[in-house]
Amino acid sequence: MPALPAAKQPWRIWTDRRGRLSALRVVTLVVLLIPVAKALYDAGAIAHGARPLNDLIHRTGFWALVFLGLTLAVTPFRRILRYGNLIDVRRMIGVAAFFYIAAHLALFYADQSYSVVKLFTELTKRVYLIVGGVAWLGLFVLALTSTDAMVRRLGGMRWRRLHQIVYAVALLGLIHYFQQTKADVTVPTFAAALFGWLAGYRLLAWRLGAGELSTRWLLALTIAISVLTFIGEAVGIGLAFHVSPMRVLDAAFDFDAGVRPGWQVLAAGLAVVALDFAARRWRNGGRRARPAAA
Ligand code: HEM
Image (cartoon, rainbow, N blue to C red):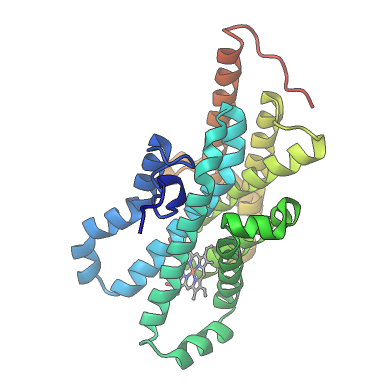
């Protein structure tokens, strides 16, 4: 049988659509395999830990959420850096998120002693698992419809509309993350804030009818998300531990106790603002950047 041209060999994920080796795809592939490499590196510690399967369940769930976030970050970064090629790896990252979440469920099944009855009993009994299960199904639909053939079958508009459910999936994934966290919610709060920033970016671009946001809008978005994160965290901790939210807010300035997620998202957002500012200046050959046309 004659060999297929490289462009027609979809398993050659390190090549672009024309079948040429793509540095961006190779780098992406390496990044997507970091969690596997890290788990192999930690294999000894995992195997000798109290609950090896649970450890792997946590790792796969965490990385699935990280990669889900990265798929949402592609559009803002593509626009800020004017690097259209990034779209080429979005599908790769999304499919990787699904692979990790498939492993997450498979490990959970193994943790239930491979009993289908136990699996379904747990999945219908615990609220955090029901939420995770619905998010899982959403990701499954997204992965199933991620092929070129499905894009053609559904038509561009319907496909895009369907893939908007990625925001609902992310929201459910975050709720599931919060629900299963027993004590310190710093990391889930930071994750929620980053997803909030990404959703806010898309919402603002849509409301303003703009292809991209100006540096000022990026700054406004960053400040708004940072303030909302401080308030959300203070109210959340206040309600959960029956303390005054004002006391929690006061503690935000006590850096000995750690850097609160509100500051973390502010720092991350300001880094994006600085990147946008530098990219505009660079494009304008050092002259003052003009605001983006709405
Ligand atoms: C049927 C679907 C799912 C099942 C059965 C499931 C099950 C679990 C379990 C058992 C844990 C650990 C809880 C504990 O130790 O107390 C967990 C943690 C987690 N899951 Fe899921 N999950 C599902 C879907 C999802 C989805 C769709 C996402 C993300 C989009 C997700 C993200 C996470 C995260 C981020 C954690 C915590 C990781 C960490 O501690 O760093 N899960 N999940």
